[in-house]
Length: 376
Image (cartoon, rainbow, N blue to C red; front, side):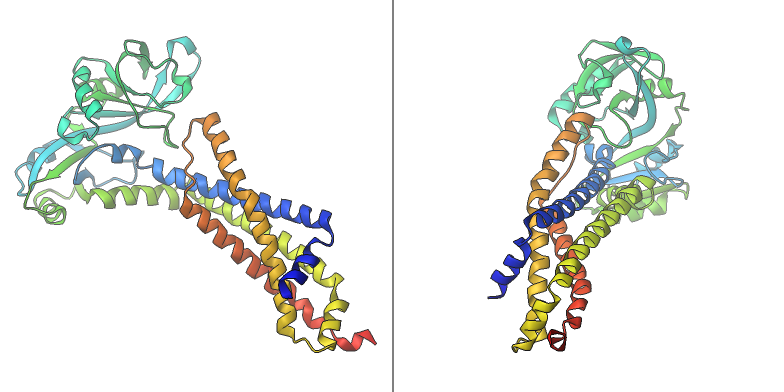
């Protein structure tokens, strides 16, 4: 009996119910978008680090994040090579640069420029590994095929400029754009130093493969003991996790998305509270009648809770496909990958139920005013 009564109460005024569902659905859609951007920011912040295959990574002691990584003397990598447990090493440097397509002379694009020593052992993608030989030529670049359209035509043999110096696209690879930059390119270390004006003795990262019979944790401790305090050593999963956490929890963009999701949740809860509060106020005499004929408060509370749940579920159902639709449009327009996962779907459903619980508890306080004595 409870569920039909809650259903009839909810849809007695269909226009008001549809307006309420629309408002709550929009707030849930905003939550989907804000948390989707948050997931995208987290995943893309570690794209470069995840592109290479390594067990340990050596950084400057001044390292904070990719865009403020600092540098250290490459002598540290020579010292690291003789440490027990180190099987192989590679050198990688990083800097933000400016890509300019000659067809769009007035339009420049940000670029994640990666300098690499072309060691194939640290490249898991067989196609990229095979194409590393093309980067031996000076001013040859491997361009990310998924870079922003402002990069122009991504064609092997095409010339463009990096930091106002002419380069040639020698080969292509696939990485994807991120909140760091609109695209990326890989060059050999000599070309990297020429493009960025970096001292050849300074490098950004040292990639380490651990020898069989040794663990990453043991080799990391050995490297820490052997190397001076001007460098740090991280295990790969911990390093990528730390980079993602920094980008989400410290940088403004992550905090902004979290704040946006919280505001959208509050807006949805307020809308639901107002709807339930109005609904209960309009039916106080009916609830008082139920009490007068013997129904307990718990039964009346149950009707209100079921109404709150109906509003929440009926708002979530359209918000879910709309979220994926808007994410697809955003991805097509910005070329930024949007990650909406089933874990996110379940989390937003949990937030919807939490919204129902909070709004329902607050609104049902009015049921206490439904006094049977007021009927006479």
